[in-house]
Amino acid sequence: MTHQSPVLAEPQEPLDSADAMERRLRWIGATRYHSLHPFHRMLHGGKLSQGQVQAWALNRYYYQSSIPIKDAVVLSRFRDRQLRLEWRHRIEDHDGFFDTEGGIERWLKLTDGLGLDRAYVESTQGILAATRFAVDAYVHFVRDRTPLEAIASSLTELFAPNLHEERISGMLKHYDFINPAVMTYFQRRLDQAPRDADFALRYVRENARTPEERQAVCDALTFKTDCLWVQQDALYHAYVNGNVPPGAFRPEGT
Image 1 (spheres, rainbow, N blue to C red):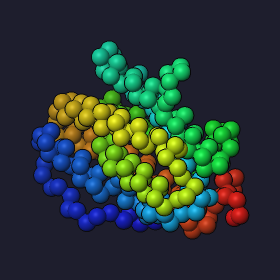
Image 2 (cartoon, rainbow, N blue to C red; image 1 turned 135 degrees about the vertical axis):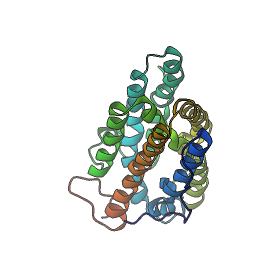
Image 3 (cartoon, rainbow, N blue to C red; image 1 turned 180 degrees about the vertical axis):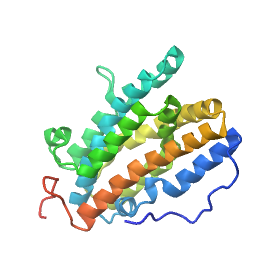
């Protein structure tokens, strides 16, 4: 599937300042974020069947459930106690904390509401191979690359609130099998994502001090957008074009 992005010229200025780097980062988000993918446009525009929405939520669960694992890896990269304290809440945001509900539980409420068996969702048995490969590659990236790049890869959160707002309004408007009670994951992220993105952006602005380091930051964000985009490619190929691979989830009636 081709990458259908707005025609926005790439900034040509050298990465000789934090401001220049931030402009490049925002250009990457404006041209490469997965909100631009045809599958997402179909999802938000009411063009998918319930089975196709189930396939999206099922596959996305693997990404959501891997985020606290990714964040634990990032946390382990730093000796600085204050930075670890700052990053720790991300794990609790997704895992919850004892009797406090987290993002993973909220996502399971979505899959419950869509009629998927919870044990089946949690097993990740029916996800697409491309989903697993892309998400695992992201976890490996934050483990193997520099701590600066690990934090930079989270900067897709800069662009998430607009996506969540569009998703909440679009899915509630177009799908009679969606109700507000199952959309709490996205509603909560409207507050969490800007807070997390602000911290990560400050960090890379302060710690990427050379053009080479700033380029590495931009490349890390590009890598993350690719990880998100390829998951949409796989969903489109399997559930829109009808090429569901062996062993993957098949909606009822297909």
